[in-house]
Length: 353
Image (cartoon, rainbow, N blue to C red; front, top):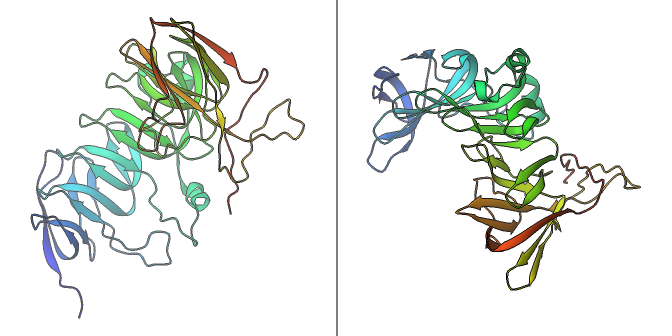
């Protein structure tokens, strides 16, 4: 027996008109009985401030974009996410942007924009998806533009998604592997990979450095760099700044931290070799093989006039590793020393079978 078809009602919000779509197949309900996810049959249009959007209604198991429950609603019946039938150019607060998947805030404003939404599988790899990703000249907020603003404005890159706040301001951007952009940062111009996140005023909140950056912190100069970050989006990055531009958190694989405490004792914290990196590689100029094993980094963060020091890196969701020590900045003397002089590292490349 075929699945029953119903008429789906989308509740109006500030940016999305009330819409009824007949003939949908419900895939999931909320606990309150409202529709949560639904498949769409045939061409239908949802009128929004960002353009007329057509939910995806075609696809098969062997295609790049298999048929899926294109509409997701929240428990009040408002549109939460929408997979589009074809790539559409949205009239966004950032300018025209291509999209195959969009998500929304409660008021109907854009939350995330995905230029591509192919399903990765044995049939379709991320490299295949990357080849289809468009190059986008993202208009960066003024605080992020390099000193030559024209150069910054003209930068193009392939992005996985963009996150906006309810007022339409850019809050983070996620880059495809291998892509970088140059940003103005509190420690000077720097290349970012993986992604970057912004404070509400448009200043830089965090980014993933493409190369090691030497920066002054409350405990000394730290070379911030993680060759193997767990981040999966630009929301979470290993190098973070407070709103005043001071370093709030940094991950390093190149530095040792010595702490001389008031009682005369000394603590020492150093990166450790990672246990499972498959066939990892990082180029080093003074290694005869040109290869070394990636270390398990140190992560430090500063709050309440204290430094927390931990072995490990930020989790994909942003969780900080368990600190090995939390030390008052006023109660000890800190020394930061290189693990290995002349060491330079590149992002980790894996070959895991």
